[in-house]
Length: 69
Image (cartoon, rainbow, N blue to C red):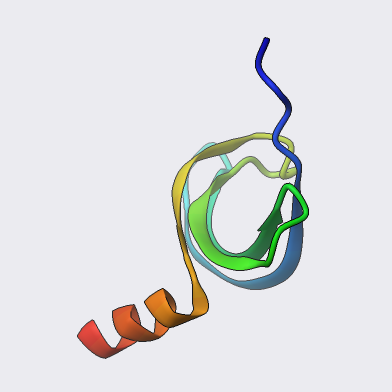
């Protein structure tokens, strides 16, 4: 039995792109299962009810990524 993943979008930082079907690739800070919020990049349906696969970054990882870019 799969457990439900709980999430809270703590801060919407910005939208990177939008598909013709209305899904948006967004950068948000998200708390997963009540944990410390992390930077998150993934596709979201227009109502945020569905999400695609994504990647999360801790604060330190996000800073390192910024330096690399």
